[in-house]
Image 1 (cartoon, rainbow, N blue to C red):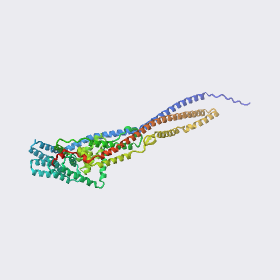
Image 2: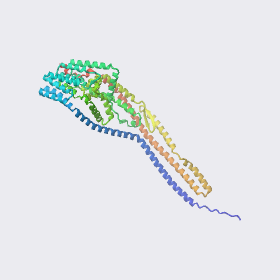
Image 3: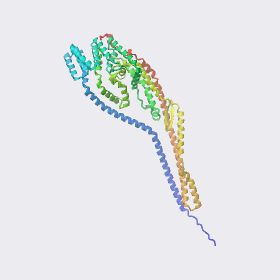
Image 4: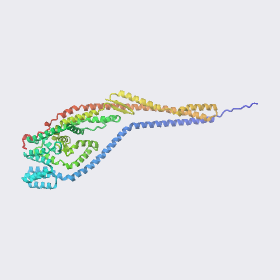
Length: 576
């Protein structure tokens, strides 16, 4: 009798419970994965925003560091300048006392209110309080000359000439000219005879003041004109002289060149590596207006003489005796450098550029042509009058014109032909900002490629790709084996994993598409603004460059003869 095997129906309730649990867990996993991917997408978006603003933040930080450094330089300069001035007062304060008395003695003689004995006592006291200073024996000689003590006057004159022949000769020439003595021409010849036109003392600017202000009568004016014309001819024949003079005026005019901040070019400054060249070219282009304003202010208006010639000459005598002496130069130069740092609010670079243009004004010995430059561009240092400024500019006219042309060429060479723009890895060029359609298309193509590359990287992992195949095999095995619960669970889990991963990939691709769309809109706006600034830059360059010809014409119209002030002394025939 055969045995009949009874197959009982399997109890699938446990499997159903497992499946329900797996489905529940898979749902939770799906939500968690979606949440994680959303967080990752948010973080990536934030990172891109940070990277987008990083260059701007770096620029702002650099500006902050620069401002902080300038503030520290300003504070340091304000502290040091006090110490320098204290040292000047300590070491050379007694010079100031002698200088104050020099003009006072002349005015006392004019009024007749001070006795000769008082003047003698005062000058002798100054002689003892200022050993080695040339002005003290010069004042003793003046006092002795006034009271008729010729022997003392001769000894004092000799001592003054021994201490500083150069300044003493000029001083005595001006004094005698003040009192209408013809002997002034003798001292003037002595003064010029001691001069080397390639190495003049800074005080020669006082003689230029006398000439420029028309204080010399016909005879003395003829002497000075003859020497000056001869000097210019001698210096002009030296090799490289013209080039050197033009270079000096290039430095002098370059000090007038304005600095250019970002201003209306904020987008280009941030997104164009061409910005530095653009900024420098703008600075040179704006120089024309500065040059015109500087020389127009110098030559416009009338020079109003003082009521009396004696008063005018007293101003020049005061300039001669108050102009600091050579031993004071190092401290005076330190004082000027610190003052420039203060004037530029701590901008040491701008201060150094101005100091470089002024440096020759502090030299003990300079050539006649350098003296002209100093008188024209740095009157506050060289102690030149307005008339001397005009005279120095007029004699230097050809060199100034050449320097202006050189600076103009330099600025024009800096103007970039193609202006480069870089946005998020994209680079384009424009000449005048009018090729927006072309650049927008190029930028759009760049973003499309970047989107495609980013999208291509968002794909299922190898495990996720294999999951449906592995899951199918496991489920097939579970059906065949029937009792293999583990295979059933694993196959179902693999299928759910694949489904979840595929959904996450699609969401990430959709997120990327949205981000690139927003980025395209934002960069399109940036590109439009940048091109607008490029167009404005070209217009500004053209507008300022158009000022070259009027500036060139103005400088070329300056005449030496017209620059010399026609003083009433010439017409009155004052004896010299």
